[in-house]
Length: 234
Image (tube, rainbow, N blue to C red):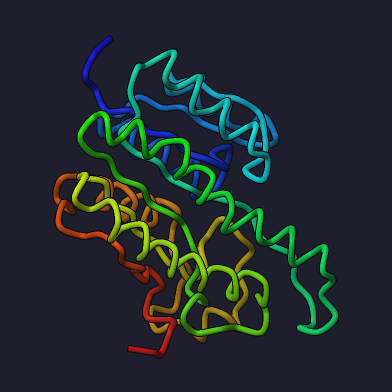
């Protein structure tokens, strides 16, 4: 086995996850990818990586991804926790089941993955984790009630984790994208964005690569907006 870095990426079959896989592959990472549609297999085959089909909400799928990566590569240096979109709807009409589904999708997935990879990274002397969150984590948007509520909690977990494992050389950060071009464009939304355009998935992937890289070696516990100036808070 070589010493080339290994990255795990979830929801890697399309959009930001696929773009992150392509960017990290170009940077020399070996890849282990997960998606629930089979798209990760197509991406992995094209990039010379490995993949499994499963959901980020399934603890068994996350465990299998980690185990397959370790059997194949013998190490895990980076994790990109990407997900789909939680349920939406009027705030008090969202069911308990939808809130629980959102919890699995945007918070427990990160916690479960951290439990799996942290001992591995500790044994290696370090690692880096990037969670793809949302611009609305700190500036709640009524269009995304489950997402912004639970991703605010993700930012708190990220800070707690980062503080605890910084001395082990393990970093965790969040990227808070605004609207991204993997989704349909709305002129009304474009008008909200100071840059007057959506982000490209490649721009989000570049931010992911930076936070995983040694150039970001003193950055941990942060939630970094990549939103074209969309949010107003400072």
